[in-house]
Image (cartoon, rainbow, N blue to C red; front, side, top):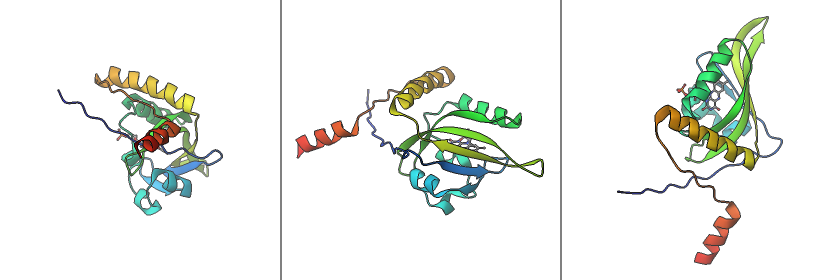
Length: 159
Ligand SMILES: Cc1cc2nc3c(=O)[nH]c(=O)nc-3n(C[C@H](O)[C@H](O)[C@H](O)COP(=O)(O)O)c2cc1C
């Protein structure tokens, strides 16, 4: 049996920063703020016009997005935790609020505003999502968290 080992870096969303995007009714990105581009590692023009699932992380359970779309279709606001994939393969965690933008009483677009979450929350939600995914897909993956200071300790020992 072969064991493979991958390591992915987490990008922390700075406290007080908001990641904002808007989409059309099919989930195609129509607007991305600078923070979104910076944290996801994409240029704004690489984001606009693409489907929002371009940053979908494989750790996200399908049911979370089914719930998101059903909530939006009912005209309600969706709140939830999302792990997104950066262009370089790394990831970042956010708490997202997604709702409908209205103009003259009519729905015109969807909009999402996201804020940082604590490390403790991210670990709690990762465990929950791992359970959901194994129920949905029957696969199990082990996720190991390494604190950056431990990493630099290990690196300096190697030097
Ligand atoms: C306004 C808005 C923002 C969204 N933001 C994200 C996001 O940050 N990350 C993500 O993976 N999906 C996001 N989605 C959901 C995606 O459109 C998509 O449903 C999801 O990535 C799952 O991909 P799939 O539907 O192709 O399975 C967003 C949807 C909307 C309407």
